[in-house]
Image (tube, rainbow, N blue to C red; front, top):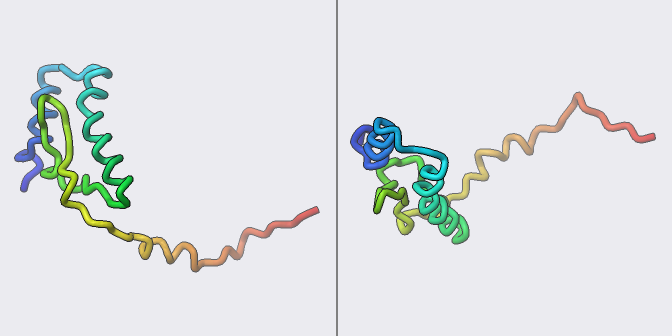
Length: 94
């Protein structure tokens, strides 16, 4: 799906074109999305915000489908950083 075909993109561009996004509007539009993301994280899951088709618009507010995400452990991507021992930094106590 092209980004231009998503509800998220259509919603944002139509409101930007009309000049309707003041600071309070952005908070109001984003709050339901952020609350749902927090609920997903509290369940130990990852909110899949990488796919814009997961974001939908209801009553001029953004939200995300909350029941389609599985627990993802991405720790293996960081193990390399913990295997390297620093050779140039030395701590000397006095």
